[in-house]
Amino acid sequence: MSKGYKEYLNRNKRYNILIVSIQILIIISFLFLWEYGARKELIDSFITSSPTEIIETIINLIKSNNLFNHIIITIIETVISFVLGTLIGITIASILWYYKTLAKVVDPFLTLINSLPKIALGPIIIIWAGAGIKSIIIMALLISTIVTIINIYQGFIDTDELKIKLMKTFKASKIQIYTNLVLPNSFTNIISTLKINISMSLIGIIMGEFLVSKQGIGYLIMYGSQIFNLDLVMTGILILSILSLIMYYLILYLEKIIIKKSNK
Image (cartoon, rainbow, N blue to C red; front, top):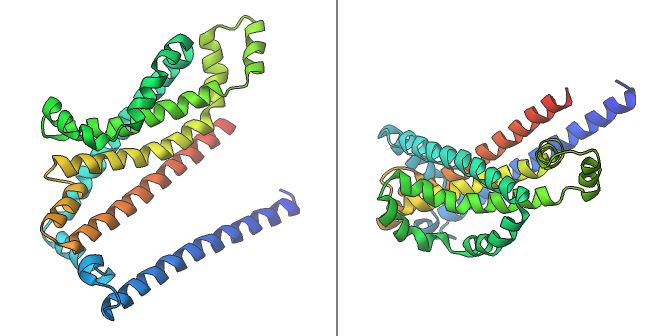
């Protein structure tokens, strides 16, 4: 490894540390101002809660053995919907790329479904699937799968046409073009879609829990709003933010592993 490259890596490392430090400083400053405003009654703590009240709520939930149960339920539902949504999305996007006529036929319907407010379909989903985990998963799939199909299909059709024509001159079949060119070429787009999909899945699960669940973080938030316990609501929102961040970085970690293996 050359000296110049080592210096570049060190500069990049210092820059990343600086960015993380600034982010941490912003979070600490926000929490301090939030707590200060609540204590000095500059803001209404009944509506906004405060960091110390949220911590107390978390401690009480842990003592009552409820917190981890709600978190685990939400995580399991999110993972199921994420995996299903990703597999279904990639499969349908692949079929649409393979059959261009079919893609033109279903394109307006995908746009229509994507533009629909999914929460409005909640009562219909409950009637069809019942008030349980099945309805929650379907709600999440409605939100995440369409986005996955549209984004990944767009990545497929953005593949360089010259490269496709070159493979066709060598008598490559459509399957060979897909597996050897289109799919590998769309790797970056697929990873970006996964980052979106994990967030969409979590949003869908929370919306489903709002409607039918008696467990999960979404249920905690809805229950807190019904009894005007804003500490519980803000606690649920904080836990959701942390879960979303963890899941996002897990996808980033997966991306790094795949890139390392592909470079070997």
